[in-house]
View 1 (cartoon, rainbow, N blue to C red):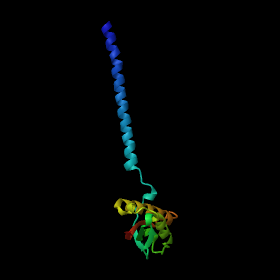
View 2: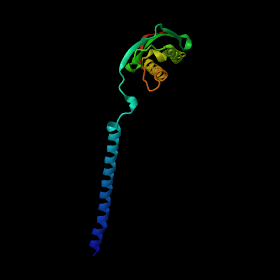
View 3: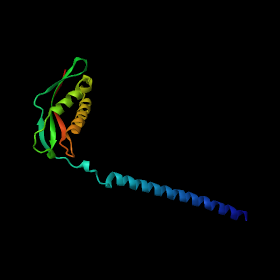
View 4: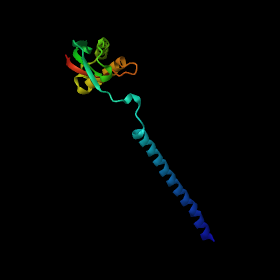
Length: 151
């Protein structure tokens, strides 16, 4: 009779382990399915629509900007407009002002490396997009340096 008690005591332990393994597998599969849904299957937001390049608006005169420690930057740039912007002429004064604000006082060391120039360019692009993209119209999609000289 003592042997029958030992056999029945082991049965619940095995079923608890099996139940825990099944629950773990179900949780992992559910998490993987949810992750796949959010990464691949969910539709993209409306803002992520494909932008098509339009006209390029060149800032006519290069800017001379005071950097830190007596250095300066002579920079020319152009705005890559979207097709959505159409052919209407835009006022570039705000873009010029934003560029001056972005680069004034920067250290020359920040702008001498490709990584530093790209970081400053991306910050400028973000500000210009915020200024020019209004009323659900995406007008500016990029900027191009036409000259970039530091001294």
